[in-house]
Length: 127
Image 1 (cartoon, rainbow, N blue to C red):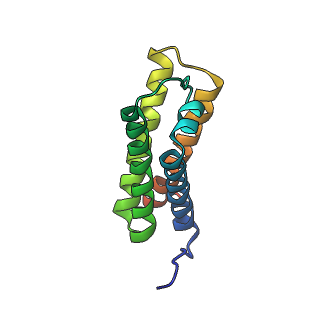
Image 2: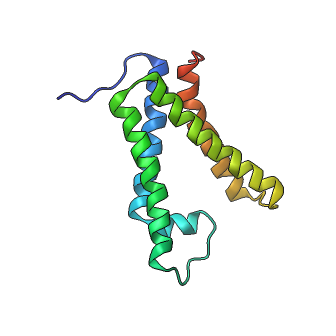
């Protein structure tokens, strides 16, 4: 079985966005304490159920990113972009309603927007 890397630029953008999402998911899955710290949580006494929730969120990103890479279909790229887009909307809403407009939140929001736009731009023919 050969490794598939797209030849068209637009699909390469979507592929790289999916790969970045999968990589971030893998890091969250493997290193939940670090992910919590980077996300702004004060890591102290966390019960095993808390780590399980963080690992599960990382596994969702990992699974959807890998599915997009392995299947390389427009609908899967669209699902990835929509899911990441709603995550970005949630973070932006938190910035407004929870007064969470901090530099860390702005950077993570921009990352989420870029990761959401990469596959959507390909699917809708912008790249």
